Length: 484
Image (cartoon, rainbow, N blue to C red; front, top):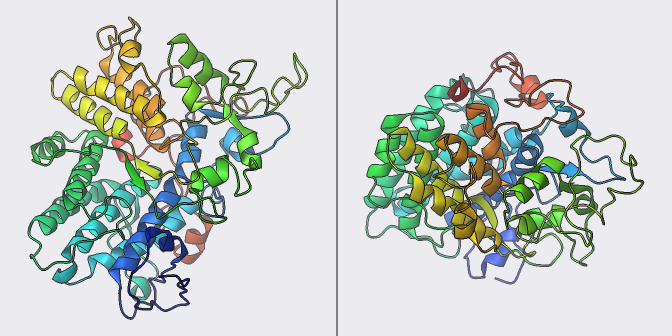
């Protein structure tokens, strides 16, 4: 298919003939579908999922960015004023609103279309169910109570009720189990996705593994031993590679990987201003250096003068040395994260899956050492670093399993490193739940002694659905149910 596909309030039925690059040109309006073409809906939805974690096509900051800021991974170079609200922990109804609004108006609406298909498209239906669970868990983890049971009725109900966060978590497990059943019981005539599935290429066994991996994440986060046991009982197991979305990212303008486009370079290979503005914090550089962690050179670019991090929220950049923290001198985002314009956009790391398994086994009294070490190895592999086994053989707490008296802290600390720059929102959720890693600083511009524990509902939701929106909870004390 050589022509650019255009949509304007109407989903047009077309025959999918081209490579996945065309998925970057497709826009589906889920509010006005007359005839559904699942082969087109699926890649659009998956692309939206990647954007929600990494960045929007227009450079909007999303889940990974706020995670890196709140978990003290990233700071700012001299000469920029890029992150004033992040450094002040200025959580308002206009702070990172795209996480809420884009979840509903983009990815979830697309996946909802898939869940309403007939049995000929049972595999697509199951994918829609799995990805809805993935996104609704994110929404609960960011906001607590959110619209769920009435959320995706389109024009039938423009003012959905808010459902209890714990209830949503429980139902997500039910939906994930149901999705696995749909896959296992799909008729032989059911259409199997192909290249239009820009996550797993239509491999439905991989989809079962991913559903089970999301289920385990839910079980671990909510400390639900029954859900954990259910996940471990699934014969297909868990994911065995990083979960990447790639609709055919290229060097062309508007078609680059969204993380690269925001934090790397444009189509002319000119570094973006955000690339120059964003750098490591002093704490994370010191931590990685003190533990002889080879990942440091992949998480952060090493300047000619050596690694240098910046205090988050620093106001006086010229004391004691003028121009010490200009972009050329500080550790900007590194090559293990910024691999190329065409790299897949990660929405779930293999490392996190191993660490979740390790925590689950630990919670049930088992020996989680091999899973813990597999998580570290997967993190090294993602970044392209070597020497994982030598790293975790060091007799250092929260590095070596044997030398870590607090095994949970070791797992969560290593997950913090492994999600740095990739899916850092997950380490923020873990911190809110466990308080690890310990001794993590807060921004120097913060007016509180700790970081926020949730986001506020957007102003747009307050104005359009004010009768149902709960009172805005305190962003610093009103923890999500699984953290209480």
